[in-house]
Every structure is written in structure tokens, then in C-alpha cells.
Image 1: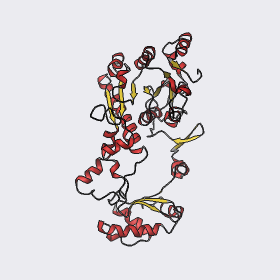
Image 2 (image 1 turned 45 degrees about the vertical axis):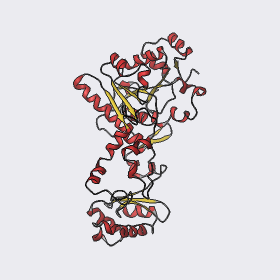
Image 3 (image 1 turned 180 degrees about the vertical axis):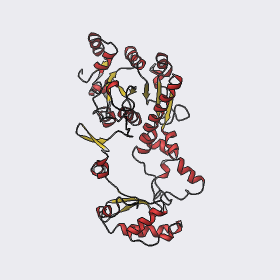
Image 4 (image 1 turned 135 degrees about the horizontal axis):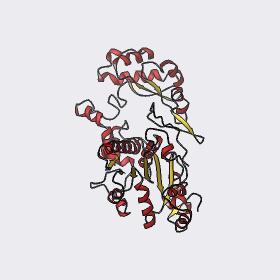
Length: 395
């Protein structure tokens, strides 16, 4: 079982979050809050505890996955009156509620902002969706790729004509879960002044549009208008892109500033630095750089360029990343129950976060969490027998 709120290290120690079980951005945002010390209690479905009741394909993502680390988990049937009341009692004691359902779902369950904030006026009610809480698409189904398509972010990828979806990174996690966490933190800061909670509308379309701000500026000033793969920061320039090495691996170059370009070209032994400012010279210079990079292995280029001002990095696989000395020196990855997972970030000097607790199973903490509400053993047994509550040990 994860530690209670007062025992968790980190800057959010003492903050309690109720998380309605979901996929993608919601658990990622709540993982960030838990990593930084919040006591996150996830409300799972009863069906998540009993495999025979779960939908096909659910089992991988509703179980003890990495995004579920650092939680306490209680399984409730929120569709029935008793399950709804137990949820409201948990909300009464919470600072934050996070939900990622389609707009209107929580209202139909009797758990919308009004009844929740009637019980707890200080509650920060955070809503995570793809399209947002209103608009002609708000009730439509969708996933990461759809939301970043509508924001313009997807069109910025995929040199050669067809955009390539980055797997969840831009939408669900960068524009969704992280935006959600920022919203929660801002609302908690504001609550210190007003004493009141508020509703947060976090939408992946909004977040991914926000991520395009700098590129939109370049576009509007005429500095970003070529097809994808032909611009300075998307692989069109010789100094900013990915190149294949002689052993079939890749390296990334990012020497945007002229002084770094000089360092890069000197180490590569390539001439033509004086031609760099004119984009008309880029295709030929890029071919020269590519041919040069192809003469050595990735490891050989690391030995030559890594740690210099050439703005170089090897392109590492997920298996290789934890072994790199930079990541090892910073403990960028931590061991959690035998799995190498990304460590909490960012870092704090006075209130550092601890190593996250491994994810537990749905309903693993039902008895302990409900005992904090004053639910006696006999009452818990009645709720278990009636299917209102489930535990990982009561199937």
C-alpha cells in the first residue's frame, strides 16, 4: 500500500487527490502529482477487480501499469447510490478531483461539479478531455491523433508528405496530462488567496495548440512555410536533423547558433560553413553532412562529438536510454519493483520527491481507504457482498 498523505515525501505532501480511473492523460497527470508527494486515491471500477467482468483489452491498462504508480486504489460502483455516496465522502476530504470522462458523464452519475463542490467548497475539480467541455465535437469520441490533427501539431511532422503521429507524446502526455497537472497546481495556488476551489477545463486540442506557439510565430513572420522537412527545425537544415551512421543507427544534430555550427563543421571536417546562412545552400550541405556521418559508427561519433558544443546526441532506443552515463549520473531512471522507470521530475532541493511506490492492483486499498471514512468491518463486508465495493482480495 502506498503511504498516506502525511508520509509521502515531496512538495505536494499533504495534498489529497481523488482520481477517477481512466486512460492516457488522466493517469499520467495524476502520476505526476503522486510523484511529487500528493496522496492520490484512484477510484477503479468494480469490474476492474474481477477480470471476468472487464471488457476485452482493458486488462493491460487498468491493472498495475507504470502510470498507476504511487496510488492508493479503491474499487467502487459509482453508478449505485451507496457507491456514489462513498465517493462524495472521499471528495469531502480531498483537495482535488480529477476526471477524464466525456462531458456530461459525471453529471449523469450525480458527481458533477455542483454536488461535489456543495460538499467541499475548496475542491479543485479538474476535467480532462480531448475536445474540451463544449463545442460541436465535445461529445464525439477521439484519441490523441485526432486532437493533435485539429490543433495543427500533427501537420508539423512527417517529412515527405504524410504526417507521422508521435505515439501519445505530443497529445495525451505533453498536451494533456502535463497541462492537467499545471492547471491543478495553479488552482491550488489561487485557492490560498480565495479559499475556494474551481473547475479546470483541460483539453488536448487546447494544449497541443499551445505547444505550437513558437512555430506559429515563425510561420506568421514568413520563417516557416516550406513543406515539412524543408524548414530549419524539422530536418530541412544541415545542422538540425537526424542522420544515419555506418552501423545503421542514428545521431541527432542541433547546432542552431552559428558558433555551434562552426564547432560541428570543424569536428566533422566539412567545409562550407560560410554558405550556411543561405537556405538555398542547405540541400547540398545536408547531403555532405549525411555522407560524412555515414562513414562512422554511432559509437565513433559519440567519442568524437559527445560533450562538445557541436550540439550532438546519439539516438537511443528505450532499452539503451537508462544505460547512458548522463542518465545514470542524474538517476533519471529509478528501479521500482524490478522495473526501470523514469524518475519523478522536476527536482526540488528542500522537498525532494521519493522513489515512487510500485503500482498496486485495482481495489488493493479499498478496505484501508474506506476505514479512514469510519466504515467498520461489518459494514465493509456488506458493501463487498452487495457489489458496491471490491477489493483485490475479495473476488
